[in-house]
Length: 97
Image 1 (cartoon, rainbow, N blue to C red):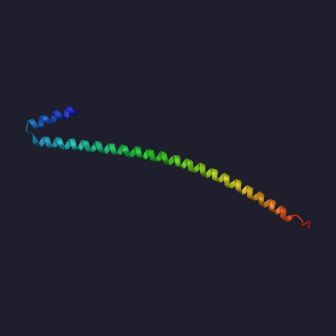
Image 2 (cartoon, rainbow, N blue to C red):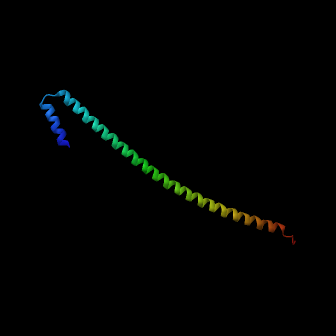
Image 3 (cartoon, rainbow, N blue to C red):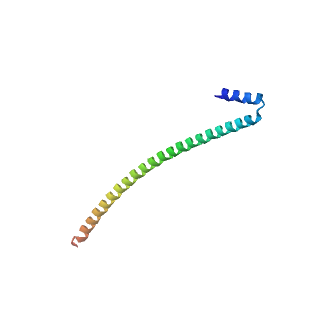
């Protein structure tokens, strides 16, 4: 591909067609810019995909942590309720003094 562009460039220069050479050069610049823009877009897509994957992993971990916290809190509530029942039982015992 580069050889083809090189031949075209040489033909335009040797035949003293400056206007066509400038047009050719501008076309080449436009192609390079388009290539760079495409590469940047692909990079942005890849970064967005990586970010989405990280987000998904973090959300899964958050859900797991919340479920663990809920289970721990429910266990604490059961323990506190049992303690309160024992305390009430002890308070209701008659005095033997």
